[in-house]
Length: 71
Image (cartoon, rainbow, N blue to C red; front, side):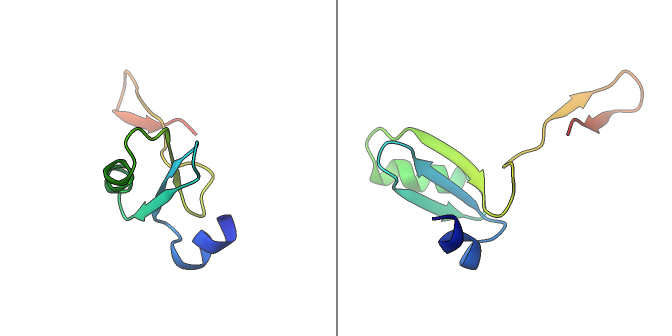
């Protein structure tokens, strides 16, 4: 699945039903998950960003100048 998705869907989000392997791809994570839930009655959804090690970056507030990345 990884090679198939990376060829045509790099930088998009994929929502995968971990129980069935069914999936949806979209520009936004929420859209991919919503479309998968419309087709499956109770999916166990895993979200990934195609071609990346993580779908999202964690951020934290600091006491000084605002937001900093927590990679």
